Length: 387
Length: 149
Image (cartoon, rainbow over all chains, first blue to last red; front, side):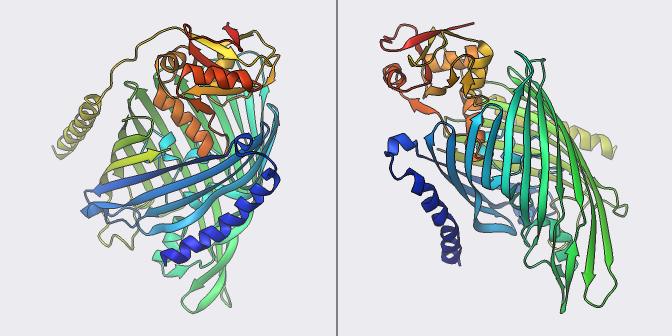
């Protein structure tokens, strides 16, 4: 099984590497600035009750492993070509090697650049970097917006991104991103967990066009950035309910996001609000359409402090609610979190995090938790190495 | 009664976690003098603090009057620590986390990194557009120095 997965990943990656090598063959290795980087993390989870995302966290679980390998080349200062593969395991999710991104990036100047291929979708404050553990202080970003069991499908798309920055004087600028293409949400993604819990499956996932943009304003107040983004998509796919077949479609989903971040010296503070209203419809052959509307509203507030050159500590409050769901503890989730990160050296780090969670809307599947409790405490320890 | 017990327990857990983390804190870094050097192809003779910070955090790849330039890093040492503290405003771990963020999201490549001042001077002297930093006392023939405004 593992061998098949590795072979599948290699089949996807090798043609891309060959493709990247073609225009580079005439140059020396040093000229190409070929770089190989990677990282690996191992997490340990413990919850006082309720298993989280299919892990056996209520008994203590180490089912959270990631490993990433990145190869890139920069044959000239304006052109970069790269590919990144990832092994991801979190409880019921992943246990496979996938292509994170594979792209060609041409940056003409500060004002305009373009990247194409399988690319990260530049929405929100952290979407492009939410899966890069070495770059984050937190073991787990606020799950109200950055749901870890959904990220593999939602953080990228096949297509392109245009980007650049426009100066507004010495102390201010606006960075823009525009994107478009096709998004594929795999059938194993956690967004389908409620359907799976109800005995339905989406075997091939859903797919559809996606487009949108983002603006980041670096304000004249040093360290303060405020921004907004919007993601528009129209996914659809096949659904199976026992022997019955049908389609699931979401209509046009418009997801606005507003965010701000302040970084000065040892302090970082950030906030983000996101809304995703979805008018899903399940249409089984020969039966009337079944509407399944949801209206997700999420926000968080976070702050961290660099205690020393090696130690950071922080806290956040994260809130999620489905305004269209029936009133119960599975309709919402509130999460108070305290966290710390210690860097032993440039390569090795450890993270510790304590979550105080009220509600079960994110990560607590009914199928894994027949005796689901409305509140959960979760402790996370994580060790990471990068090169 | 039950509520107040839960709050006390929560605060206790937070304080315990912070106490463990604070006890692992490292020592402060020593400081020396640092000088910014550039390949002779770089037209500018001075660079602003904001440009220097943006260049060495990957936020920009050009400076006023010189077009495309590329930053060159040191792995560690007094010059590296002072440069980060004085001009970038980040610790080494936060600085590298920023570059890893660009690297692993496909938005940038890691700058060339060298062990010693001499290695930086040698690379900057032969690489068009390269900008690095070294200790003030290190020899730097074959490169120009940039005044930081």
